[in-house]
Length: 203
Image (cartoon, rainbow, N blue to C red):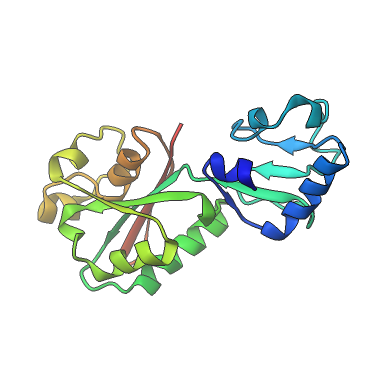
């Protein structure tokens, strides 16, 4: 757990730590499924099992931002590398915003524990639903100025409404990409009647 915390990873199932710690104590090799190399390099080589086909063996540790099925004993670690961009109508409650996030993450195999931060327009700096979302997720919210949002070129779904009322080509997609510091937009704009959501991956 100390290694995970030092790496800034969210421990999703702390109850599985004892299984991994016991393997360390017994000097049993640890199998790690960590495609992003967030934690593997922090574990001494003598504790790591040889390269394996993860399709044929249950890993002891999985480190990923994707929602996947694993054994109950597998320790799940989440790197905080997903940045969500949010747009919403004035007065939209946090329940509506969070519902779209939950549904979208579930349907696209993403995990909310990997959310690093929330981004939106500076116009929403007093929007209670977004402030409540920040508290609910325990993640910071970044409010971007118009020029910052318009500096993002990789917009897949520009918004006529945002252009008309806010003077920006995009809120949610631009804010997500800005949060990820120019990272890849892995989930273009999804919307309900009151909320828009986009997700970018920091690379």
